[in-house]
Image (tube, rainbow over all chains, first blue to last red; front, side, top):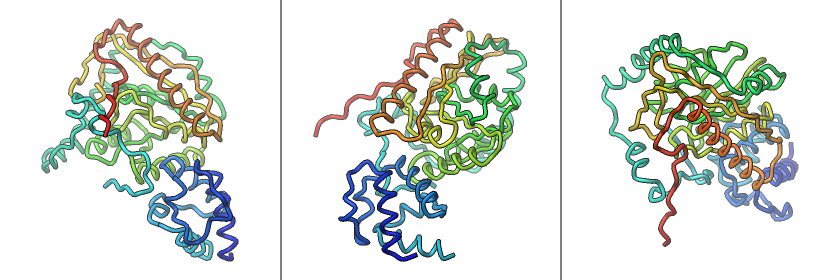
Length: 82
Length: 272
């Protein structure tokens, strides 16, 4: 899957889980994941929403170890390819 | 070992906001020696299991609100049972005595949690480990998956655990219910004669031999799969209020007059 496609779908998933207002046009690979205001309960939502969207089961520590959207996209690409 | 990161936006309450009585019991203790580890991890759970089973034979258990339990546990959807940590010791044994479901529970990854986890496994529970931070999130995710994917499963959670403050419901149970059975069954118990472990943060209660035990089920709380933050908080407060009221009812029915409040009040942190 192309990075741009993953970024688009990822932005939609995060926007639906996060409580912070997110402008999809502003989200890029360099966007800091912390800017989405994800707390521990939103993280739970995010893990299940990502599983539903991409069919990939992520662990909490995988997500919390990443800083940028680009890191998450690379990780998803690897998991989707594997 | 617990991990935390900048993603964890739910820090524990400010130390200054927690009453001294609670800080005293929740304070980190020095690393336990080998003997204490062996006692806590292996011997104590076995002794507790035998003690609980013997005591239960002698208790006279009276149930209130049983239709709520039957409705929740007998239905097609996975039941999620909520209780306060201080009554978990006895409640888990009572719930485990009913083999209508495969029950999942959660214990902290601490040494005390090791003992509790071993006891719960002896009682027949599938135990997941986690408390706060990233490992707590992962334990909750694992629990949701286990309950969804195991036919006939149910979940039990001490909602103010694993370290309190006493009577303060954490949001995890709502997230669990949102993604599993869609409702939470509050339950508690009390006894006319009991030991209360006053040095524990949760004031653990254990009924004495031949005590009359009042087991009280509350009305299930419906939890929709999607909630706005303010709705989520309103439901969290509603569950907290119901559990505290239920605890009061169980104590009244058993004739207990516990001098400590069910919910410890947090003082406001000093400004600046």
